[in-house]
Image (cartoon, rainbow, N blue to C red):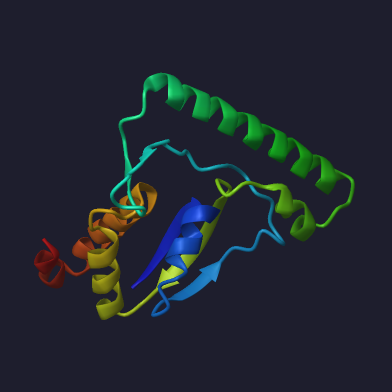
Length: 152
């Protein structure tokens, strides 16, 4: 099965660690970055360093989002300015934050997809990656309903 994934550079780095898959990513060397992924700030879990908890005060979330928008806007402005000045996209992209959108195709056999879904939908997986795995699970169940029914 092959799935088209649109996510942030931060989450794509986690996905690419699944070595049983083949990946084809659209290169930011050749195409311009068009946007950023939305991020939901969460508190660090003190018991599980790989987990976060969605209980930050609204004011903290607002501060986070304001800072993030500021960085994204500035980075995009400088990125576009440099491209307009003739700087190669492959160089200008170094200014972009990890929230930059990327798109890639992820291809794997059924065993790899089952393992990916089981591992990445567990508790303790970063929310953004877990959300992605849940979407992949829906596609998998639709494409392979008999096997998918075993995933719960």
